[in-house]
Length: 141
Image 1 (spheres, helix red, strand yellow):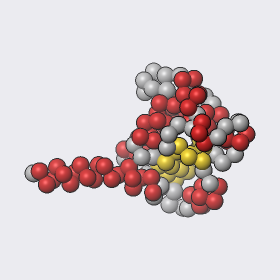
Image 2: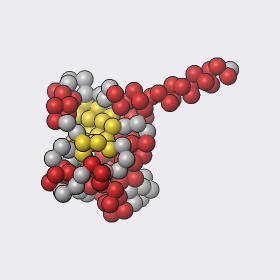
Image 3: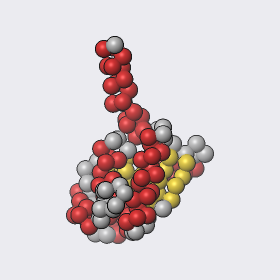
């Protein structure tokens, strides 16, 4: 029984790492509307709970969800009882790759140091490969 528990714990701990390295779902979020952002992230979390390995790309106004100084500006919504910025943090903590668009930082006078921990800057060739891959489901909000 102890061996089974240990094996189960090992599987649970390695799932997020697998999700990060082989995404089969790309969520592109550009909306500045709190409810749209929240619903996109709720659906991404639900897909993850059902076996999807998501990758999240934040562009335009949605990029602010990953900026440390902007986290408090994200409204806590009824339903998820969390703000979209808090949901981004939760996804990052669960091993999901979250990135801002490559042009977001320079066009907003920001640097990578302004981003929350473990959020990166997307590389267009890598995102282009995901978009072109027929095995990756694409969701845009």
